[in-house]
Length: 239
Image (cartoon, rainbow, N blue to C red; front, side):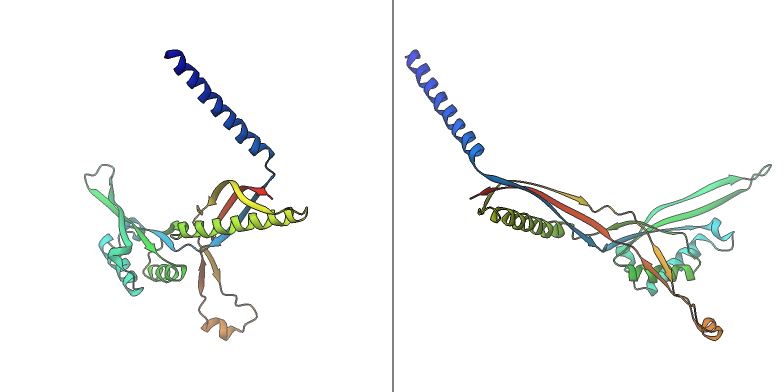
């Protein structure tokens, strides 16, 4: 009984090996074409993060932290910013220093806020309103594109269609056609942009003095683009 079981096991193993050899042979003899292609997109960030720092030391004791916070909130209200939704406080603290030979303490209190905005035009209004209120310690710290997943799907379809089209052109040149995809590898790069604010003032060259005096120089902000690249390596059958 034991020897019969051993014979059956050996036959099964042999059949598996024969099947594997046939699969390898088919893969080896099957004509194919490898294609590598990529697509690129530039998008405008739709989430911008401004860091706003308010410190009493910046005003040399003429204004308190509370006064400047109220000024900041007033500026945001004039720009119709949803303050509970968009504004968060990151840090509030004080640096305490002692005068030499004195027991008096001078606290220097400051607060750091993070403001989330959704486009450059609103950001421009906010920065202008804050600067009018003497709040100028402002940095653009982060930008995001919130529709990255949808963009990735669009680019994947475009890259695959481009790969198949190019493969069809090459195969057609020798009288063959492209069949189904045997294997697909893909990758995506980008999405991490260095936050920057570019300022461009209006050009007042070639205007007379009267126009120059009446004109108010406007500042335009350009936050730049985020670049994405999506690539595929595809192996197609040839028929």
